[in-house]
Length: 183
Ligand code: IMP
Ligand code: MG
Image 1: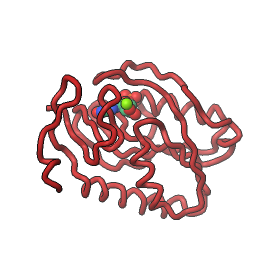
Image 2 (image 1 turned 180 degrees about the vertical axis):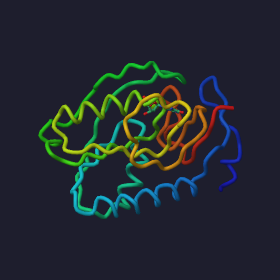
Image 3 (image 1 turned 135 degrees about the vertical axis):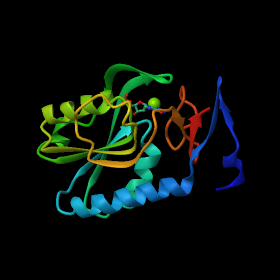
Image 4 (image 1 turned 90 degrees about the vertical axis):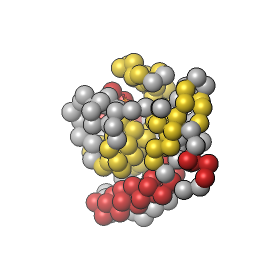
């Protein structure tokens, strides 16, 4: 890893230390892409990227997806500061026609309590999706309180707050190339 990623960083009032490097993230994504390419080779899935946090993960993942697919974006809000509020609000979504009888693959940066993916999972089935599958880069098993199946997980992590590679603290830190954890 480059020298700068060895150092702690400050975002607003908090200090973060290096946690997961760029090459590890690349490996998680390669593994995910291999499995998805194999399992979805004839389903013509719709990849539904959950904004904002998943934008960097989705870009890197989807460059390695070689099955015929479409890509759309959905935006919800569910999280404030470093603790989950439990409430999920729809900001925008493609029209229901996009989901009808399709395999929809939700692309998430992280599944924490599961509030967000549970909400989206039911929303998509209500909207007529044929099959809903969840792909997340990070998963916090100790924080997860729901029962919706998480089909593909890049890496399970401890129940700690992370930033970088799309993930933010109060809107900041998304553009960091690697992942940092709250000190
Ligand atoms: P959940 O609804 O509790 O599963 O939380 C999902 C959303 O909360 C994610 O899409 C993230 O935007 C945010 N989130 C959860 N854990 C973290 C974290 O450790 N760092 C930054 N954002 C997080
Ligand atoms: Mg967030």
